[in-house]
Image 1 (cartoon, helix red, strand yellow):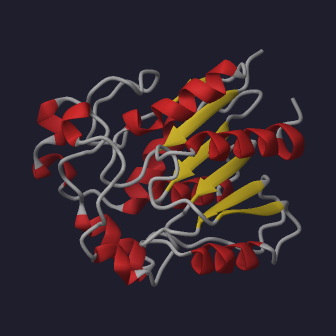
Image 2 (image 1 turned 30 degrees about the vertical axis):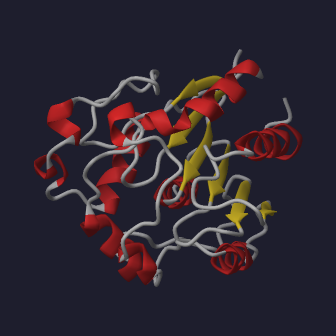
Image 3 (image 1 turned 120 degrees about the vertical axis):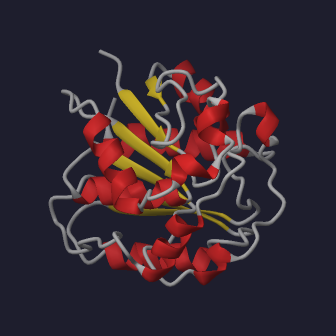
Length: 236
């Protein structure tokens, strides 16, 4: 039976940003899904498709959406297995992965340049130029819901039990050139998770930035996460 991998995109992105990783993981025999956030209508098993214009090009679809709503959306849609899926998230998606693991979901989690659970006010600043393809290519959502960024900065709906010994294995990945989530913040997250007996691993990519899942050299990031999943977490 193929192991299921669920990819969770960052705020302001769409599932299509995971296309490179999905190709890499799929070639290794994984069954890949990249479910969209609630306002987007991209099919869960088709990360290359474009989100419906009515959902992605207007702020109306995002109105009232909060972090807890997004986490519940993913929790309710996860295939519980057996075997349970591997969860992979980037940015705010990386924070969502940690919140799902804290609920007892997932066989393991990988959080790439994960948004801190609170205190990261630079998230509210205009984002730096993105290496991810423009929104007309389907990888960026034209609307970025600032409410979600404000909640993340304030720590609303982001509580994590860092002493949870029952949590599944977690890999945290830092990007040394990230302008939004510094390596120091990812390292601090790692130290908090080390309070528990659960497996926590830190992996650093000093030469990568915010777009480490698509920018040149993404293959090394994907391969390192695959190696960790196979060796430490899933043992396939």
